[in-house]
Length: 318
Ligand SMILES: NC(=O)c1ccc[n+]([C@@H]2O[C@H](COP(=O)([O-])OP(=O)(O)OC[C@H]3O[C@@H](n4cnc5c(N)ncnc54)[C@H](OP(=O)(O)O)[C@@H]3O)[C@@H](O)[C@H]2O)c1
Picture 1: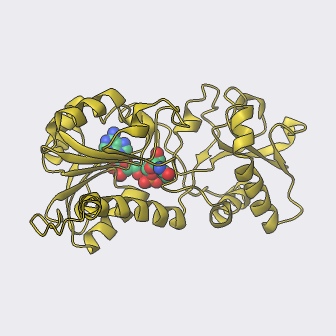
Picture 2: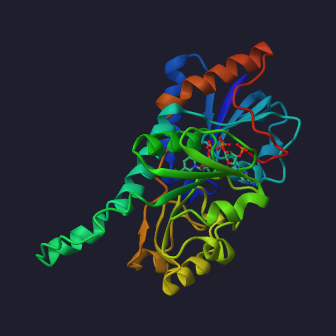
Picture 3: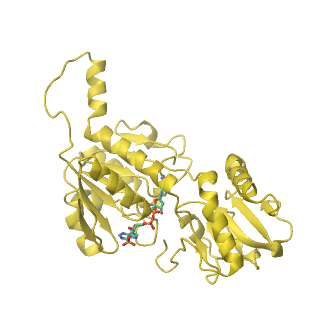
């Protein structure tokens, strides 16, 4: 019986994220110092390993864990895991659903919604110009905030933004009732949702259906000069379509935490675009200390033959 931790697709990523691997190892051993926790590439005999913990693991390796009884994503998303063609669909996959992570991403989203709504960069510019520019609009808090994806994270963001007095619309796969929000579901209601969203926040998982969803057609359905916040995944966004929408004024700005290529290449136009805010995928980073209890609870359940927590629906892809 042993647990394997695999973080990073290649050697560079493995070194870059060694702090994450070691953080997980420490957190698991603090539960039980007798656990056999192995980290890539020092895995010993693969047949010993019954629980595989991954974040952007080396592709093609999963088929070697012939005795694995479960695979756990060390993050909320599982797109990094489901791209592996070698996944044995009989082995359950679980993911992290950590309230601390949810708080983190909600704080991020709230911060960037408020910087837009409260015109933070506008007032900063007026200060630079030494201008006492007391003219409306003083706030854009009458604008409508649209959240795509109302699961563990998007649902919490909706709750907090509603508490702040903002008007909300939401969109997800299945119908829901959420306090303070007009809700739309499925492709048939996407247009109605988009047509109202002055701020569009993407909190979707990356699946076949949601890949490239932030595209030219989507932007064209938003009210003129809307603002985009993407904390989902980089592959939700068609990057050239964003640049075109900003150039035409269809979008007034964007705050992006996730990118098609991470790290964002040095010469990428997003870095220096005057209307794009770039952050390095930090909206919510899994904290091994807060997330380890659920990973260990699943290991206990695994060994006891009990139902696992936070199972991923492989058919839906999230
Ligand atoms: N930037 C960061 O640091 C960071 C950190 C953590 C997570 N994330 C991203 O956030 C994503 C969401 O996490 P979560 O824990 O909230 O996921 P979740 O609980 O699985 O919720 C996903 C939501 O998306 C909706 N959805 C999925 N496919 C859809 C489709 N085709 N059309 C419409 N709605 C769809 C689901 O609808 P139903 O409710 O109807 O099923 C659900 O409301 C993760 O997958 C990850 O990519 C980013």
